[in-house]
Image 1 (cartoon, rainbow, N blue to C red):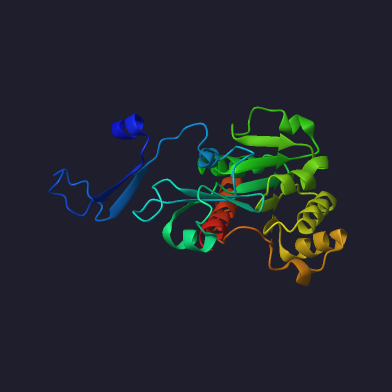
Image 2 (image 1 turned 60 degrees about the horizontal axis):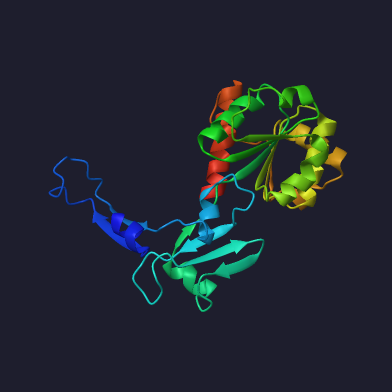
Length: 253
């Protein structure tokens, strides 16, 4: 790392942890790891991607970490549908094959800031996901109970914020059919990939009817009742089941 600071030239280091004779501490995990040492200056474009809560974070980032014709630390950044590259001839298709891909943390909107939303927000915060809270009751949003990385908004801005922030999942839990229908309709209009709704299928159908949305038009994105069937009825149990399903959705695609 000292030489990288001195010269500004990146380095790639490879460690084989299956050979415990090097350290003799019994700490080997029988795996291998490659570490890219890259000087992060203010003008290094991928730096913004390392801040999961920055509004300027790109949707995807690829870094060159192997010895080839391009220097270590060469990058491609996808932001606002535009591909920006440190080298004009480093094509997107080639990047996907050879480079390390970094994807920003998931962004989730929780619609309804009741007491059962708190454990959901807390689990998401512990996973470093970006959480946006929506509720028509300002008193619930102004309390200090929400995790630090949560952002609170009035319900008037649901559609605009979900669109501008590229929200990937909306969890609807206001416990009011009319408000839930409004949340669902707005998420449906801007094509949010994952829409989770509390309650059994009968309640789901009531919300869909109120929103004037057909099940066949939204069924690939709608998860109702939301959450994996893990058992338990406490708010914390339900929060765990919701976050587990989202974890599966975000990272097993």
